[in-house]
Length: 399
Image 1 (tube, rainbow, N blue to C red):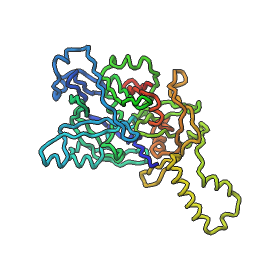
Image 2: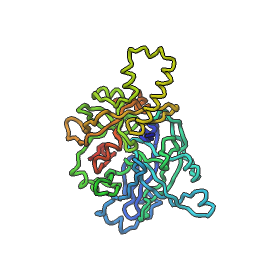
Image 3: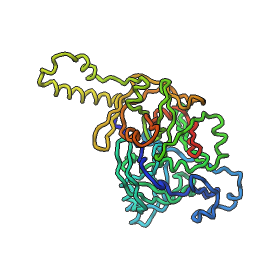
Image 4: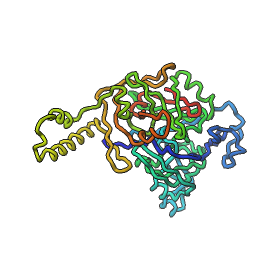
């Protein structure tokens, strides 16, 4: 199947990659300032919070919303009351709903360029060039989306001054993505309930404004330490594959878990063998090169075998930034996966298949940061635990 890896979004960035305020009009106004949240409405003039709620310090500052899946991607539906499409502007009406992928391996928010043009968004800056999973990414305009509410019956103001950059990494099925700059705004953290299972649970996402809001939630969970990459500011964890520890990006923007070739060799991980590869081994040493039609026949067999492997899910295809096709091959057997350092309790996941391949984005990190990740932990594995609580300010994640 064709794969859209939208994690590993531009990391060679500088400056403020996120400039917005988080609010709830039925509770204390929460303002982001140096990754801290403050309940001071004097600093947030645009929020008209009800005074009786502000006086009630015992009330929770958490808010829960539906979590929507577009294919394998977890999305937060947001409504922008002040934005409008061209047809809406002709009718003098406003208000539009947009889906954003929640991506823990993105350090900036992005918006589909066509969406930005259709909504006539105001340009407020320029994102610097960087790298994505498929390779180099150019610089791009940064746009102001403005105020937003959660797209659900509760229409309270959720955030203000949201910005996003029109980088070519957004999922075509969604308007854009929200990265760690967004997730790190919540002092208590963000809880993901993936839903599904035999009882058909609904997926939800909960944002915790204060430390006290999440204490009961994390008490029975396994804590995994996060190491934030220097300059890039993306979260990595220690991924134990077959008992060997390797650094990995935790990536809700990737449908699959991928190890690079070096990491796969380190953990003695083999991949599925395609039919043409088996035949090539059998024909080694035979006078096959004397056949003038051999090359054409081999190419046809390779294309046919690759097509069949893609249909079966044994091979995933990713288009690189230069148009080159990148192949990710599935492991030939399931492997044991754990998260955590040797000295602490580990979060254990059911044995799973993983993919192997050299993603240009991971390769680019090798020369940029110390202890660069050799793998990405994707949604295929993450969702095998019912919940995940991401706490960016505390550099921890709980399962």
